[in-house]
Length: 236
Ligand SMILES: [Zn+2]
Ligand SMILES: [Zn+2]
Image 1 (cartoon, rainbow, N blue to C red):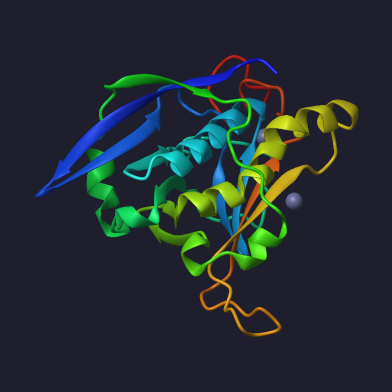
Image 2 (cartoon, helix red, strand yellow):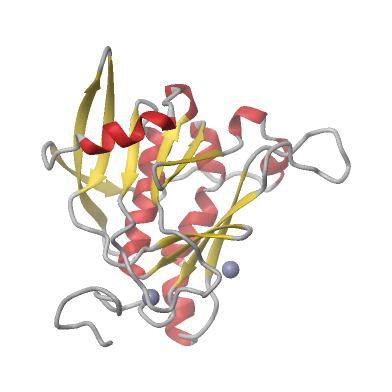
């Protein structure tokens, strides 16, 4: 596989006495619209946006002092299901940062196109875990979520992000081959958010269940632009 790299801005945003480090992509993400759905959140990615998503996930795992921000609300796809609701951006953070989602709108407004860094994804970015590790993880290792300012916030420990690393990497490693053979195949990653209430046989959740369903868009998987975006290549 060719080296997977992207450029990101790294900003330090001051808000009162606090300073927040925010990492966000230099190149706009053209095809990764993320929508609220009845049971969770639906994220439609093409191949290029899959790279952005995987890199963001890896950065979140290894950057306990940063917010990793993917602006997705300007992304479009006309294949989005009719049950999808409002569009959202995505922020991934370490839970130890204790970032209050209510401050995000102010932080976002202060972001600047400065501090460019090139980021290269290692060949094996996430440690491999026994599947049992998913069930045995401590409560701090569950990915939690909040929604504010049209943004889905994920928070968790490094281990929490890494436990989903294999699921996330399958999009990068296996989806292209699967879709080359069967371009209409439903190919996705399902990431469950929230805390399972440990100690009950039926595994009830303590907070509202939410699933992040990352779906490879069959129609636009290899296209640079999707229908719904402006530009001459738009096939609408
Ligand atoms: Zn699409
Ligand atoms: Zn699916």
